[in-house]
Length: 129
Ligand SMILES: N[C@@H](CCC(=O)N[C@@H](CS)C(=O)NCC(=O)O)C(=O)O
Image (tube, rainbow, N blue to C red):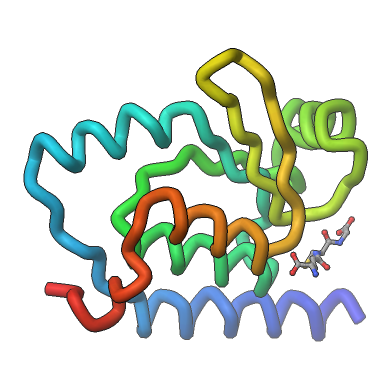
């Protein structure tokens, strides 16, 4: 089972690498504004988890520089996730609101919807450069 998982994981990473999506291009000032906002976000994830890959691809398409924290390789990240979010499940987006409140969002689909609504690149695939 371990070997099957390792092979599947390697395949996922390989195809993700081969078919890396293009990022939308923003004006430098606009990108700087987005970067300032995404500094308050962090994605807890595993490298070869297909749901995490899906979220990372959405981040790439939308030109979002969000810190990723590997909850499998880093004991600290794992503890933060379990203590903060309440579950050891990835992907999970940590969202620090402007008022300092912290939200933990699970479910890849919800995370992608949130990022696309907030950073508005629903047509990123077609406007890619
Ligand atoms: N429906 C969830 C599925 C997430 C999921 O099943 N994640 C797996 C990793 S691929 C997980 O965290 N399992 C718990 C564990 O590995 O401890 C989503 O779309 O985000």
